[in-house]
Length: 396
View 1 (cartoon, one colour):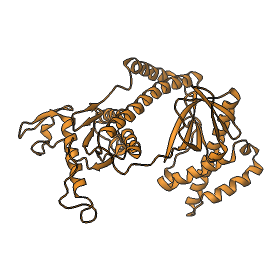
View 2 (cartoon, rainbow, N blue to C red):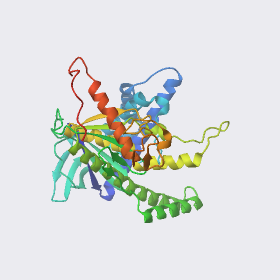
View 3 (spheres, rainbow, N blue to C red):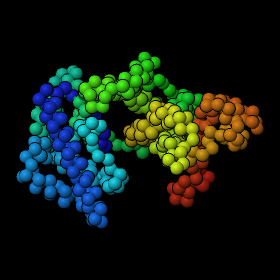
View 4 (cartoon, rainbow, N blue to C red):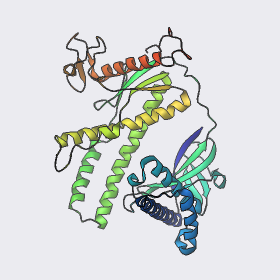
């Protein structure tokens, strides 16, 4: 199957400048092609990749700066734009700003990419027009390279290889146990068997430093050199937080996949849940600051990223992921099945007002999620491949 390998690149000064130039060229092609697509839509017409790729080839004869970047990178930019327009709609695709968008471009032909290992910690790859590029060999490549993507994160450059590793998804997980998972704010991941996974992604010192940088940014003039330095420092803090969150989600997903064959999750729409409560000028929202704090807490825990990490692990382990509606899972008693919002005393304590059952609120919700997931797995495929009398998976 296809998988990704990401390494930190060490460019020479000439390669770094040329990579910036390629990124700027791809950004200009993206913005121009997007404006062309929107202009066609204004006239109730449509233009596709084939037409734009042909016009790009013609434009190279008039604009020499287009020939400096590899042609396949520019074509891949047009392909990515067409995919984005088909997925989100032409009017919802964003422009690529020179200040906000980090340079990124892809070499789609793996046959033109050569990868060699230089030593224990270093390797190099040969990319079209960039030549030999050194990178940190932090893990084995593990397969044939299909494509390579160069991207910049802050001051660092990275290369991401799309690799065919030859693995096949197992038909069945060796474990028959099942677990329900509740994603929360007090605890990032709570399981129905009582296991809890959580960690702080930002240290107190980093949080204090970030607040000072925000105050410093508010006093600086837009477009100044000092303001750019402050933004770079703020992004460095956020990058460390992002890396810790990704590491936590991947490790947690690996632990769950090693123990259980069925994982039941709530079907959460994180984008809708974290929408702003400001409202409009005619109808302003209520409790805007409280909702903003809740949104930050949800995004900090990385709910959607954990779901993606679990789906990626499922490709290699064969675990089954079931999603169930999230309604009333936190208000239902896992013992007597009574639904009462008053039983949820706090973010961490659940005490049923009917039967007196008391336990951690997130674990109680995870047990309800598991029960709903087992009901789904027991009822699906009846009459075709599953016996009516077949029992669901056992609870761990």
